[in-house]
Every structure is written in C-alpha cells, then in structure tokens.
Length: 420
Image (cartoon, rainbow, N blue to C red; front, side):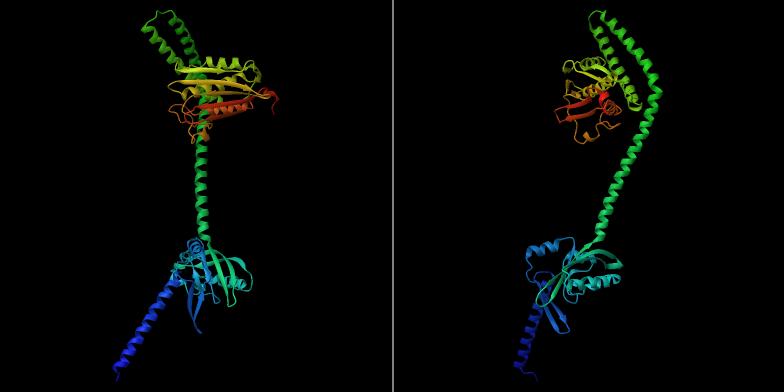
C-alpha cells in the first residue's frame, strides 16, 4: 500500500522528470534551429554533445542566407549543422536533416565518391572538391559541386562542406542562352526584313527613277516660268496667293526629287570622280537647290578659299540631305548654321540646327537605313550621307543634346586621291 508520503514523493519526482524532459526538448529545438551552438546525438555509448565553438552571429547569418548549401559533419557523417539552402536543395525539412546521416541524401551511384572526398579531407587534405549528385523528392537528382574543408581539434575532426547546385547554374545559363538566342533571332529577322526591303527599294529605284525624273524636270521648268509670270502681276492678294502656291509646289517637287535621289544613291554602286573644288562655293550652290522656309535663319561660317580634291556631286548630295534633315528638325523655324574648318589633311563641314535634339534611345540607330522617327520619310537620308561620305573616304558623326539641337559633322580628306 502506498503511503501518503510515498505518493507525494513519486509525484514530485515525476514532475521533476517532466520539467527535465521539457527542458531537453526545448534545448534540442533551439539547437536544431541554430539558436545555440551545440547538438546532442544518441550513440551506442550514450548521448554525446557536439559544440560549434566560435560561431559568431554575423557569420551564422551569412551562412544561413547564402544560396549555396552549407553542412557540418562529425566523424560518422552525421549532420551537426546545415543551412536552409542545403535543406531546400535536397527537399528535406531542416529539422530532419539535423542529426541525420548525410549519406541518406547522396545518390547511391555517387556515394563512393562522396565518402572518398570526406575521408581524404579527414586524412589531412584541408580543402578539396568534387562533383557529387544528391537525391531529392520524387527521385529528382541534384547535380552539385562539393567543396570540403576539415577543422581539427584535440578531440575530433569536423568536416565542413559547401554545396553548389549546378542545376541552378544550368538553369541560369539556359535562361541567358535563351534570351541571347531570342535577341539574335529578332535581330536576324529584322536584318532579313531590311534586306528584303532594300532589295525592293533597289528594284523600285531602277524602275521609277527615270520615269519620275523626266516629269519632275518639266514641272521645275514650268515653275520657273510661273515665277517669271508672277513678277509681272500687280501687287495684291491674288499675286501673294499664287506665289504661296508656287512655293508649296516647289517644296513638294524638291521632296519628290530627294526621295528618288536617295533611292538611287543608296542602291547604285558608288564611283566618286574627284576634281578640284572650292568648298564655300559648293556649299552655297547646294543651298540654292533647297527651299528654306522664311521662319528659318541661315548662318554661314565658311573658311575662305578652302580648296579640296573630291567629288562635287557627292558633296552636294551630302549637304542637301543634312540641310533637309536640319529643316525637318525645326518645323516651326529656327537657326541653321553651316560651319567649315580644316587641318593639314582633312576638311570638316558641320550642319547645326536648333531643334529638340536626338533622344538617347535613337542615337545608336541614327545612320541605320530605313530607320526613322518622322511621320514622313523612308529613313534613307542620313544613311545616304554616311554611305556617300565613306565613298569619299571620310567619316560622318553627330553631336546632340536634348533641347540644344543637333550638329552633324562630315569630315573628308583634302585630297582623296592621297588616301588608301
């Protein structure tokens, strides 16, 4: 029969055991979650406590948050510690990995290689690495690069491994490759479309160039006669209206003629015929063929008596296109400046407008054929400038700032016969 005192003693002892169990469970939970730096492992010789001495909070946070897996192993490959990166990699809960044998998540065909790696590390090789395959849920394999380092103390040797998931890197590489491939396909597709368009342009230029030029010449002649007739009319509203109409017809005629010229200049073989040129006179002659709005002021800053040896027709076409481009950039008027300069070997011609400037995203394509941001136009004008300039063994560049206009600079040799 249990006496009252005996009963109280048993209850007291039972409560003490419960308290110890709760404390032990809480300690084990804290260890598994990395809140303390030790782990209790049950072995045939009884429970053994492993401490992770010297683990500072910043280093623990670094290891916990890094993408790679980090695992610390004791002598029999029991997991003393691992981070969430490794747990996610092998798709095993973190608390199940802590205290388990890491070999349970190593692919059977790679178990021998893994053991060799760890054993070599314990035998004195401080830092070695090898490709090892791990296994995850649903027979998923995880190819990985494992780097192992050993830490020796008086009592034992601890091995620390860093596991890099190669499949993630493969996915990143594949994603990048796919993006690059898609960009290449888009670029090649656009190039093919451009080639097809350019081929069509070439055919069109050869077919319609002659048919359009002849009527245009007749229109230009009639416009000249019409202006002569206008001069003889008395001043008044009717005369001014007719004068405006003639000017509009001239502008449109010039635009049509420029389209045909651009088509032909871009598609035909270029064979420049250099001859002596007085540059200032050539520039002024070029301006005579362009209808410049009254709202646009023209400033010529031309160095006197610059004589070069080049193709005058090519230079005039370059100037016509650059001036036309500048005028289109100033639909409400502005200031057009043409400036020349020279060195011992080259002459430069700068055509500047006071338009809005060229947006940064447009600049890389500014000389590309068929590229245009304008409502009307084929996107050939500046491409023709570049092509003709290069035929003269020169270069075409530009400078532009938002709100400060754009300056196109053509630089050609003083004597193109002397260049290679």
